[in-house]
Amino acid sequence: MNDLLALAISAHGGSAKWNEFSSLKAHLHVDGAVWAVKGKPGVFKDVRYHTDIHQQKAGFTDYPVSGQDTTFTPDLITIEAPDGKILDELASPRDSFAGNVWDTLWNVLQERIFTKT
Image 1 (cartoon, rainbow, N blue to C red):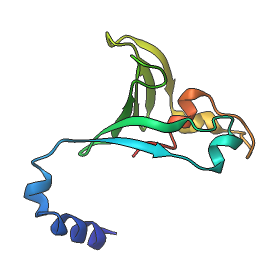
Image 2: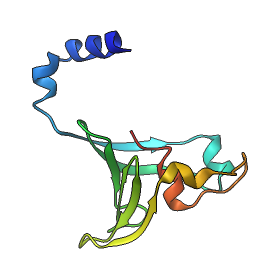
Image 3: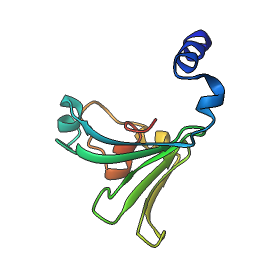
Image 4: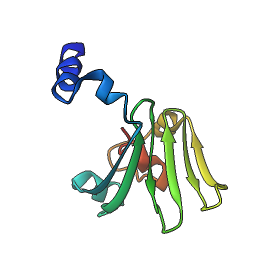
């Protein structure tokens, strides 16, 4: 895996170039059968994604509704209001799936764990 990472970094200008950047933003359309099974068909058809490329921190702008943002790290997923106030959170998100089966529905915070970096 380290060889693949080194090759990818080298092909895009090397580590010095990589370190010039701190974030990435993307407009995404993500779809698939799993979202319908989990009760969320089309949930990511038109989303704005952002990530810190040097740490495990990412999120969505204006999601789950306009004016709210979602942020996730390995240990915490939050939904924030425009003023930064946390409206909802899920600590230890992976642990929230204990006991789930294939057709267990996910809540809005749980679905984020499968869209993060």
